[in-house]
Structures are given as C-alpha cells and as structure tokens.
Length: 438
Image 1 (cartoon, rainbow, N blue to C red):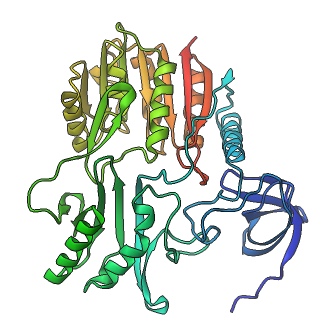
Image 2: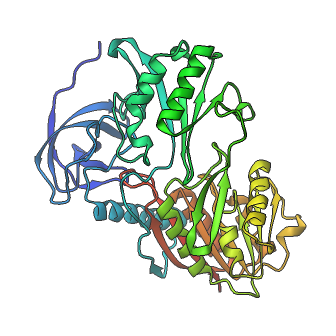
Image 3: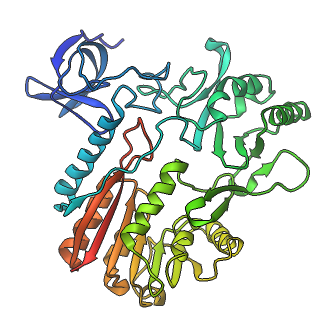
C-alpha cells in the first residue's frame, strides 16, 4: 500500500484559473485544489511529479475575504465545478488574468483595450451536459452525474446547481428509473439538451431494452415532461422513444435578432443560453456589419452567429465541417426568412488556400473554432484578407497562438480582448478578440 503522506501547512502565493492555490515549499510548487491566494492552509500531497506536486485541501486556517460558501453539497468531490468557493467577480478576475498571461506568454501580444467580461446568472445555466451512469453495488443505487475531481468514479450526488432546469432536479429520479431497468449495468451515459420547447435525454444503451424497460422509460418521460432518445450505436442510431409520431425540433431563440434556431438532440450548441445571447451581441458590435459588408463565418455550426449577422450585412457565408450541421443551418435560414446567408461544408483543418470561396471579397471574418483553434485558416488569412476579425475562443492557449501569428506575420493589430464566462464556477476560459488590419 502507498505510504500515507502527512498533512502540511503553507501560505498560498497565487491561484490558477481552475481554482488551485500555488504554494512554494523548498523550491517546489505545490498545487492545492480549492485554496485561494493569501490563505494559510493544511493540505496533503496526493501526486508527486518532477516539477510540481498536487495536493488535497484539508483545512483553511486563515481564509481569504474572497472565499464564499459553496452552494453545492458535493463541491470539492464533484469534478464538474472547481470555483464555487470563490466570489463571482473574483472568478472572472482569475479568468481574465489567465487570458492575459496566455496572450503575453504564448502569443507575445497584448490588446490595446480590455473588453468588459461577458457574463450572466451563475446558476442553472448549463443546458448541454453529458452525465455518466453506473450501477454501484456498494452504494445500493445507480449513480448519475459528473465524475469526481480526484478519481474516475461518478460523484454520489442528488441534484446539480449548475444544470438547467428541470434537469437540475432529475438526478435522483433518473437514478431510480435506471435502477429499475434490466439493462441498468449497460447504460453508461445520458446526454442532456435543454431547449426552450423541450428537454431531451439521450440514453446510451449497450444492450437492447426489454418491453418492460421501454414502458418504464415512456412513463418517466410523460411524468417528467421530457423526451427520451435511445442510442445503441453511433450518432446515426439515435431514435426517439416516444411518442410514435414525429417530434417538433428542439429550439432556442435569439429575441434581439428575431431568430429561432432549431437543432438536434446531440448537436453542438453554446452551453449557456443567456451568455450566448450577450456574446453574439458583443461580436456584432465589434464587427460593426453594415449593408455593404460581406462576412465570412468559419466554424459556423447551425448558424448561431451567421443568422444574426445576416440581419445587418449584405451577405454572410457560413462554413462548417459537419454536413448535418450545415443542412440545419440552411434550414434555419429559410425558417427565419433570411435569404442573404449561404452555407457550405468544408473541413477547415484541411484547407490548402486554393479554395475559391476563400477569396470572395470578404470585408469581415468571424472565427469560432474548437479547442484546437484555427491554425490552417490563419495560415491562409491573406487569401481572405478581411479588414476586421472577431475571434471567439474556448481555449486561451490556441487563441494566443493564432493571435500571435496574425499580429506578427500578417499585419493585424489586436484592438481588444476579453473573457466570456460561459461556464461559471469552472476553470474554462472562453474569450473574444478583435483584430484590425494595420
């Protein structure tokens, strides 16, 4: 058995963006999850590494004034949140510092001005989530929820304060439902989507449910006013359990732009509905589209930015690598009476700069890539040659890398940057940046 390490005491010098306090002990950094800058804490080292150690917080001996009582009963165990113990404004300060550090260290750039943080309510905001499921004999129940912070186990939780309603209160009912199924050992995951018109639960099933199982699921869906889908294989295997007839598409609205966007149960949508609306408004304010502008929206998904942009500019073209998302973006344009937005399917990680649509007199560019960023687009930016670029990012490191290249190699100036608090109480740093051609 591993030797149990003795508790230690230290003062925290700084804090990481995901809520780990940093103490320097005998020349080595120790990361203490849940400790804040300026606090004196007791901790136990859990993992030793060559350059740093990771530790578990045991006790706060001297608390920071920025510390608050976590709202969630399983905070500190559940890996879904890491910052509930930090004042909301301080959380945003930590994230802005993380963005600033990344821009300086990786991109060697700094914005001419910092944008105010984009945020909204920090609770019940998460409308998309993937919940793990496991029948645990030692607990006497099926566990449903997020995985633990320090271990690969599923957190023994009964509700979730960040999941959107009504799913926040469905943890125990789902546990009871699955515990009564014949396939309770073979249902490892539930994918959640909370739309404005319905709540969707996609059950990943590794064995075929019995007729009794199906009836239990149908009863649950009717009583809880939600939709249940079964996924026995890949995404193309998903089918609605009830009712027998066709279901209306899931949807969310962007009332500021008189737009309703429809999507499928497993489509990517921004996880935070209210912050998404503020983010779109900020992007349009930075791009300043007018009726003579032609805007290229890369990584456009189902039209989250493209369709609002089309309300103000001459033409928008959205480009996305998933054919299903492109089809839904086109349908959303028709549904909203938008005729000046077109969409095409293209793998933006494999462009070679020869694509004709790259050089089509674009005046503005909007980028919203995945965590890997947009290095291939940046490499061919001279073909697009936009006078203004708005870059939305979910990873400060790849954003900083791409901005550094745009500034140092392609003649752009980083006019502004700021954070988007899309995931309150977590270490996720999302951001927005504006570049202009010098």
